[in-house]
Image (cartoon, rainbow over all chains, first blue to last red; front, top):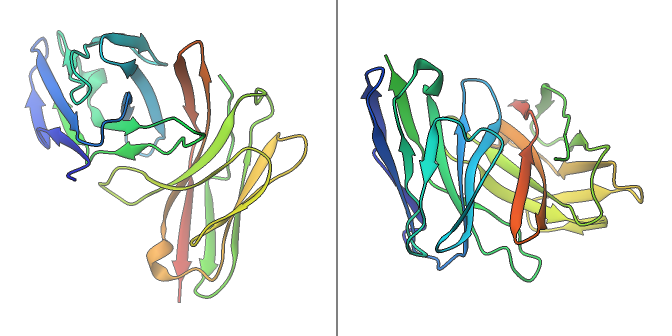
Length: 114
Length: 112
């Protein structure tokens, strides 16, 4: 199993540009999450999904959109990029069943908005 | 959301036991507590989870008092490779969804 994969690893955007961060998991997990981590800070939840077709906002959803058309994929869309969105973005998945709350994280996407 | 508080940093020496405490005063009845380890430029990695009392696995123990307003991650006999940031996470499955809050993280530095 590859686990959770994210692309791209790095990206530089200009202010106002848009992009999609890709996230794929091959563990058949129902739950998927997007976090952002600013330098020296903890992770903040952007959006999450409990299954295909179901998404909900986390703590910091403004400026982002998500979709979940399949169990495997959970892309994060940035519209009109702003410098405040410079961060490292982590995708995670979890079975969240039978009391198992472990989240499996991807390697992250480092995004810079100039 | 259950807010969590951890010490910003801790120092230790190889071979010592390290205890990192997380405060979560407004933890809800259904909340579980999980701990993660994060190395620079990597995603967090799961260490242990618990609901109450004590849980032990091959790498750590988790102590949760009866009131569940705090939890303590115990790392026995740390080594240099345990130098990392440790996060506690309090989360609950509510109404079909999950609300999760990461703590501020504790930077553990292990020296010889």
